[in-house]
Amino acid sequence: MPAANNNNTSVEIVSLIPALRAFAHSFCKTPEDVDDLVQETLTRALANVDKFDPGTKLKSWLFTIMRNTFCTRFRKRQREVVGIEPGFLDTLSVGPTQEWTTRAVEVREALSRLPTHQREIIILVVMLGESYETAAEVSGCAVGTVKSRLNRARQRLFQELGEETAQEIL
Image 1: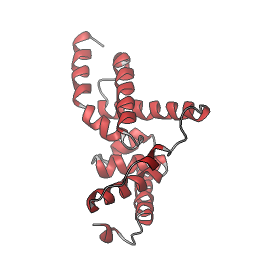
Image 2: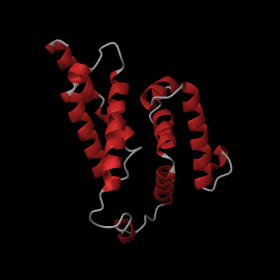
Image 3: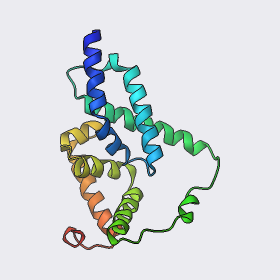
């Protein structure tokens, strides 16, 4: 890829950082982990910008890099046991007093309990507003699979939140 195209692609990558941060929330629970995942994704993308095919969607390419980066980190972490037990720090904090904050925390926790493939789809389609086709491309599956995962993810979220239907949640 010529140097001019690399510069244009680099500028485009920078403009997609907010979308990368939003997508990283589907994988990570803490802001620090989100920042780390975005940074590692950007580092890998910029190091391999010459491998990007200009005829394809840059956003999908970056989302795929992020997903693969997360999966690699997840596999490595499962082999490591270091530091404080998971969840211990959560017991040291005081819960919020505002009802809307509490509900947001409940939704975030329910989202975190979804299987990764369902959480990924609900973040892409519902929260980021991506099309089924883009979500399928990022996830490496068929559009029908995206729709099925989204439906199952919504139903499971309703169950996790103790709701019967979507109307009760709104």
